[in-house]
Image 1: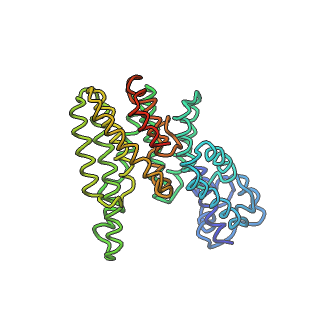
Image 2: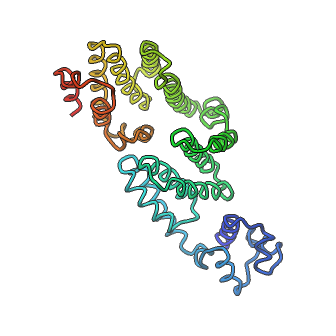
Image 3: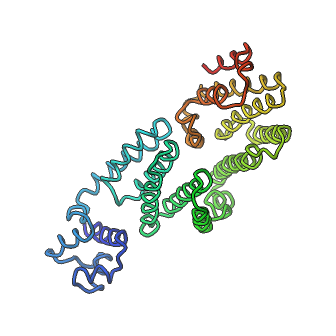
Length: 362
């Protein structure tokens, strides 16, 4: 029990932004006494326990970790809910995590996931209270950076807040200071060559684990390559449709060469999207035959991926930022894109060939 007491005093003190000297002054004890409590070398006087708990915003039971095992079980239930349901029903998961934060306001595993959900929920709902949400996210971010000792959670929260700040500047037209703030935070993130994937890939003495690391790195790098290149040219009107088609075809060739056995499933989704892009681009060039050809391939690939629900569920989280196609199967996503979002003429969409393509995905 004394281990939990020492850990909890230290954790809660830091979360309150207090130094050992600051807490000691508030309690009327020496900072050496506080230091010994946090090292587990001595206990606070019994009469001080209610005062310490009050200052740290907790209960005596929680201070001692009496319910630690029970709390850990409840926390794990929330974490499991996030892993299993987030990609299927973000709104429900968001509501559950609002409750989780009330129950466990100092658990960083809960907080960083709530931060992710909060960011996505407000973006997708175009909420009017965006600034209020920003303040809440920043408070959580600062709490994690100031008190959390888990580097994975700290880095995760940095990525979330950077995406949020860039969205405020890029999509909502907020002040440029948000972009500068994001760039400052990004400069503190590790370089790719410092990542666990790279280190494990290059220096792990266990050959099987080294191969596993290579596979993860390939999947991540291909995903990054796709998003970097399409982000560079696909959405930029200064590039011609012919140029974009050439780029996307070369990307698909690369994916198929490296991933001939469909091992890296994330890339299967990229290829599906790419065939959809190609269909739209060929239509832009008035090449109806090639437009239909590539949209049909897109539909067939989407149907095939949906026939492997475990694989789709595993990779779905990477493709949820598009508000109109959130929480849909791959066929539903592509149907929505083809019928509602691609710039295809009504005449084209009324053709029998196009209807057959849509029927493939039903």
